[in-house]
Length: 179
Image (cartoon, rainbow, N blue to C red; front, side, top):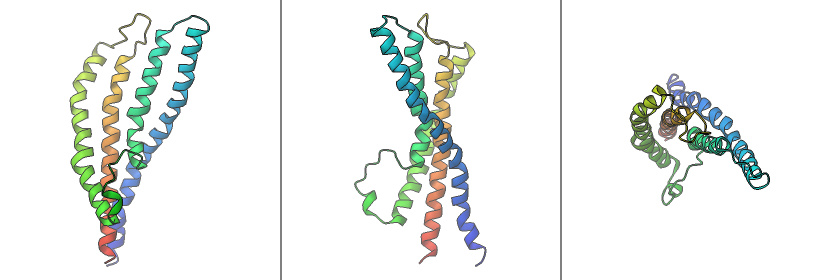
């Protein structure tokens, strides 16, 4: 069938289109790790060399740390860099791996992301309603932005989970067609 090939490639193309912004955001926030080291070095230098403390700088390290992990999570999954208990997965064929990836995305990754998003929205909304700031007097007044990383994480993870499922479907369609 001449139309079967483009139909088989559609899930892979959709997966690539969904994955592109997730990976781009992951690449962008990877720079937060370098910035985090520089800021932490400045905090230590200021405190132990000059005897000056800065709560705002210390909190900015927390913000950078949260941004790095929450926003890069989807990109790590896209690169297959996540922790995987590889007792069986590495020993099974590509078709079975695709099936494991499909089921994992559909029954674990996407539902977890949807649940996280749903549960975090009221929490984040309350924070935005009062423009929540730090409990520390000289801390950063952006706790509401920090909490916004939670639903952002959920969206990026869900998008990557859908992309993962589409790639698995494409792999299964290709392996079915090769028989």
